[in-house]
Image (cartoon, rainbow over all chains, first blue to last red; front, side):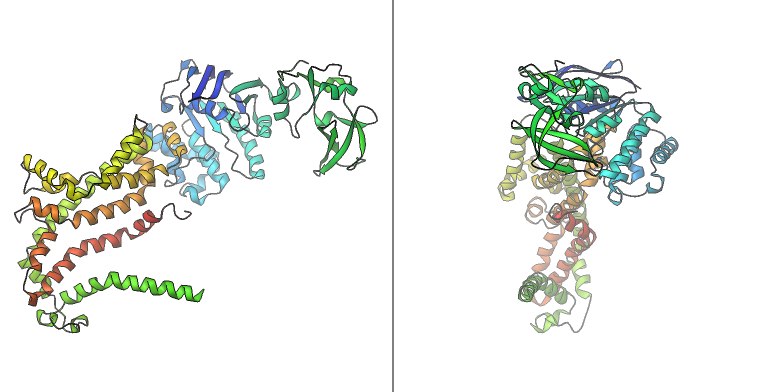
Length: 336
Length: 271
């Protein structure tokens, strides 16, 4: 068990800054999700914890120990890769025991540990198969088994669900949360999928362009996004963001702000922002009404059943004052 | 469509005839008595069969000793080339060091230097070490090859970076990754190179002729040359010798065929 800390870590690849001045502390036994779009530096940050990349500046600690410069094998961590990185020429058993062999674990103990790990992940009957004979979900379990078999202090996961189909992803999300609770170990999990972040994380670190944008528990990040980027990245459909003057009918009396309103907080009524309905999307359990006001797009989340406007209708959109998020128009940072 | 298929088969049949006819001629001449050999083209349809030419070739040509010499020399050359090629290929594929591209380009450039161009320098080196008429003379100049390094490096480059990373986290350094992951995954290319290296080593002629003068170290291809100098009436003797000398290659190809095809087509088709 161990905490992980980035202390003002910067990573450059030539002139490209992949991670900039990252200062982040992952608590012991925490499930921290690094969330952000492609190229935001989240995978580089993870690889720096693993020792697969070295920071250009700053320090990384695992527990009390500074680990930058320490070999990956000596950091007491395991990683699950997006591609699973299973050795294709080895059986499931050999894949799982591979990390034990390098550490000279005696054969009898090795067999026991492999059986335990395989048992925990429902792989006991597949031990003699090769990875190519397994489904995507089974391969993912083998990668997890290989990670848990030697009980590392920290688990690193780099988008481990992104190659699974939607149903399997939902099921595996719950299993990962369960696994985290059972193992009581620190998890650092990288994803671009906000649903994974919201459902699994104890805290979410949202990154963009190499910088940490916000760190907090998922609900807090959703309810009080620190800036426009986080506001629009978290939530599906994303938060509506319009300039202050457009939101004036909602009682916003400032021109130097942009106003964010979650789609579920916008209401179609008789007062508020004048808009024209452009598209109505039905998702079965709800409807998304896409409106246009002064050239700005606004999405309203409506119930699946009941009255709803149709394309071309002129509507008014309103929201309660406590549901308005104000961001500075130039910096994008939250002001209220 | 049908015309195309017929055309393809016609071309393949022609190629097969071109390749197999000399082998067929050698075999049928080798298994018939000397008197029949001059009866051309009747000799191509064997009537009275005999193994006598093989016995004569082994006895008068001293092929037994030459075969052993060729076997020893080939084993060392193939072993040496495979080991040095794997190690060099690993360095070029996975290890970061200054001027890697330049060094690799220089390495590849040696492929363009014909063997004949280095033969005098190599001869002088071998003579300087006092290795003439020895196995060292036959083996040492051929222990490393740019071709093998290139072929195996390409196979190593196909090993996903994630596997390298996973292996580092699993506790393996360069050596462990090489033995446990890279070499097993590059096996088809290594097998293909092994066959190629074996063919070249086994069929060497000019170099062994140059650096060996005694029967104790001469190789089978030189032995064949002495058989070929026999009377024209005994043409079945060199033919039998050629068949004997070709047998190891035949069995090698038979054994490695699966790997060879996989090695030469790896990456060409979805695996």
